[in-house]
Amino acid sequence: MIFKVEKRRCRKNGALCLTRNYYLRYRFGEMLVDRWHSLGVTDKQVAEKKAQEFRREKEQEEAGILEPKVIRIAAARPLAEHLGEYVADLEKRNRAGRNGRGGRQLKMRVSTLLKECHWNIAFNITADSFIAWRSRQKKSARTLNHYLQATVSFLNWMERVGRIKGNPLKFVGKIDERGKATRVRRAFTDEELRRLVTGSGPRGIVYFVAGRTGLRQDELRQLIWEDIQLDEKVPTVRVRIACAKNKTEEYVPLVPEVVEKLRAHRPAKFKPTNLVFASVPQARTLRTDAEKNGIAYRDESGRYADFHALRYTWNTFLKRHGIVDEHSMKILRHRDTKTSLGYTDLKQLPIYEAVKDLPRLMGYTQIRAQISGAEGQNGSQAVATNGENQLSQPADNELASREMTVPVARWQKPVREGFEPSVAFWTTAL
Image 1 (spheres, rainbow, N blue to C red):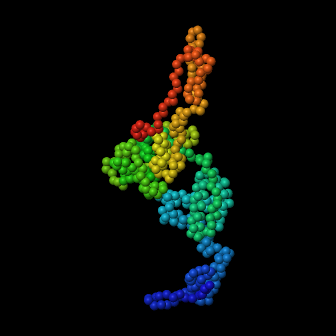
Image 2: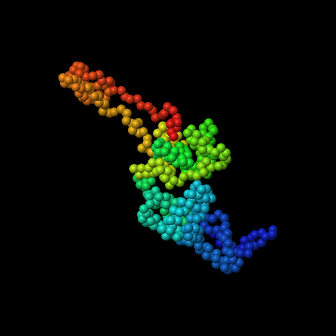
Image 3: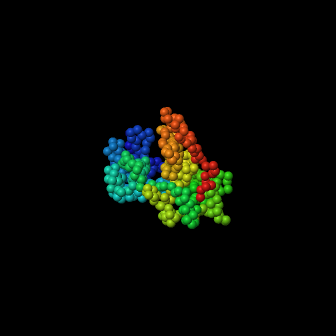
């Protein structure tokens, strides 16, 4: 161990000299090299006293009696200051979401918890106090999970930079959200989308592009003409990194009908940097437009047709017309097909049409017409067929049955047309 109070050597104007203040040169435990600690005084006796205090503090930290100094300093600072520095760090690392929206939401949620749970310093944060706060809330399960996730993210950052020893909310479980969603969306039907587009004036083009590309509200707001390639062999719209939710630049194919509408919407004189849409309607505006055109904003099942439901509408439209899961996942820019399935309105899929003509287990029933009575009145009798669709007749009355019955055509299974249309599906859309 090395523990010595002395002045350090330095160069001043090319000459070798000693510092004015005293330093502590030390090496404890398994340190490989000497370290220097400024004592900040010129009197050697005072310097030696401060060195002894430093040594005692280090020994207590090594023994676990005292927390490291950086943690003790951080513990004395208000949590609001740490939160502000965390959000600033997110913005610096480009992790605060699109236009910083994610960072602002996180700050709002954590600030709410700090206030309502009376967490002023890091020492106040406990799992019990959070659970007690959560039990008093009437917010949805999803919203409460967002509060927990935001706070855990903040505390994980404090632990990584050495401001707290451990995350006190690390093992607090989330609420099971299954069956507790308070806002379930549905897809617009083709007729509803047609009425919304044609009956909303200049906003109709925005609804139409959203319903036939799956672009999100913020992506539509930042869309410029340079992003849209209308004259290429494969028309596409580019979602830039700055606009994309997943921070990945991707290209979305445009169906011919959207290309035609955008060409008609594009001004004769435009600049590539001009916005495609001067304004994008808010959710409340869409609700007003929908109700004005006879579209239920909330249906009898409690499902909502809001702006994000236009993204559901596009994916459901793709599924109805036989687009495979891998393609729809790519078009909607999801990471897996499971996410895309969650954007599908199953009530609009022709599921029953796909299963109603499947072979039956118990066979079919034929109706045999019989002539009865003196006046030749027809009577009907149900006759079951066997599993091979052959008409079954009683053995002891076979000859009589042939004379009394009218010919019955053998049952033939109806031919179903496949899901793929004979022409491009978008030609029959809006």
